[in-house]
Length: 329
View 1 (cartoon, rainbow, N blue to C red):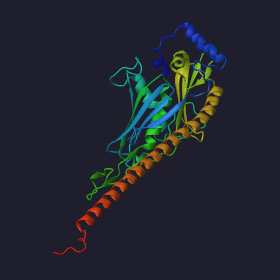
View 2 (cartoon, helix red, strand yellow; view 1 turned 90 degrees about the horizontal axis):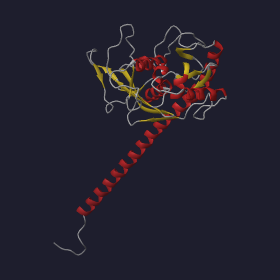
View 3 (spheres, rainbow, N blue to C red; view 1 turned 45 degrees about the vertical axis):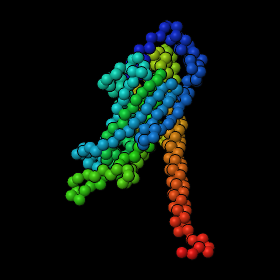
C-alpha cells in the first residue's frame, strides 16, 4: 500500500541512488540510523475518544464514535468495531477528496486487523500469513460501531494510524445502557445521569513498519516518503509488550528471507514496548489533567459558594441591625 502511495513522488535516479548508497553506511537522509523512529508525540482533544498523533511530519487524528446497533446473531453479547480512514487532499496532492480509495481502505484494514476478533490463533511466535488479535473486548462495545482516522504528512501512515487508534480507544467512554421495564427497550443514559464506561482493552497491539531498500534489501524502520518511493517492499508487524505477534502484513515486492523476518520481529518487539509506554504515559497524563481541571473548577465553585454565603450573612446583619443606644420610640 505504501508503495502505491509513494508513486506520486517523482524522484531522480541520483536521488534514489543517494538514499541507497547512504543506507549501506547505516545513514539516512534525515539523519537517523536504520532502526530509529522519528519523534512521536501524542495529544488528546477535549472530548473522550479523540487523539492526535504526530510521527515526524506525519500527523493523524483519530476519533471514536458510538451508536446503538443490533449485534450479530452468533455474537449476541458483543458489539462491533469498524475502522474508517480519510485522506485529506490538503496533506498530499496524491490524496483525492470523496469516497475512500483503495489505499485508504487497505490502510483501514491493516489497522483494523491488529484490533480485530480472535482467529484460530490469537498470538503466534511466527506466522507466514496474517492473523488477528482480540485487543479490545467486544463485550464492552455494546454500542460502539465506528472509529475514524484523518491523515496528514510524509508517510508511514500505518504506524501513526495504529497509535492514533490505540490512543483514542484508550480514552473513549461509552454511555451506560440498561433495559426498560418491558425488557425490550434499550435505554441509553446520558453522561449527566450515569457515568460513561471505559472500554476494556486487554493489550495494546503496536504496528511497526519495515522497508526493504536496494538490491541488498537493507532494512529500515519507520520509512519516510522518499524511502517509500525507492523501497522494493515493506512489512508491517503488529506486536504487544509480551512479544506476541498479533498480525503481519507483507505488502508485496521483493521476497524476504525468514531469518530477516525473525530479526525484524525481534526489533519490532522492542519498539512496541517503547511505543506502548508512550501511549500509556500520555493517557495517564490526560486523566491527571482532567482530575486537576475538576479540582480547580470545584475549588472555584467552593469559593463562589463561600462568597455568596458571606454576602448573604452580611445582608442579614444589616437587616437586623439593633437600634442605637438611648433611642426611644
